[in-house]
Length: 106
Image (cartoon, rainbow, N blue to C red; front, top):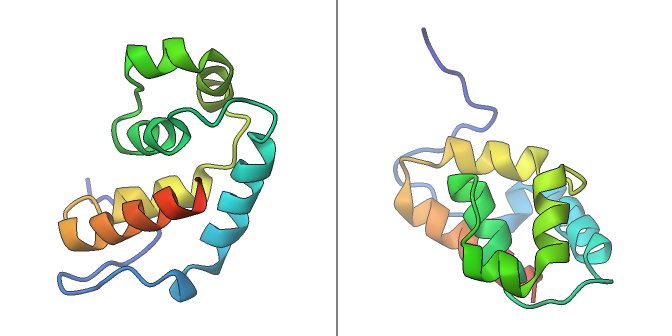
């Protein structure tokens, strides 16, 4: 079975946020949607979930409300998840994407 990705990421592509306008919209919604809970481990938890579909227990224990929001599907991860899935085999692109998300979710 052939697996098709929503985004086509090339071997030499670098992450450029201007190419992914929806990403900014989703990150702003995540920032707003999580503003009422502790920011502790926010970026780590989101990135861990997007990368591994899991969150470290110590982070979940430190910020259970955010862990619940992430696991409940109430945050708009669709396009971000698709982008992560598409760059799974492109570590340089993925590293740039992760750095950008960390900056936006401070």
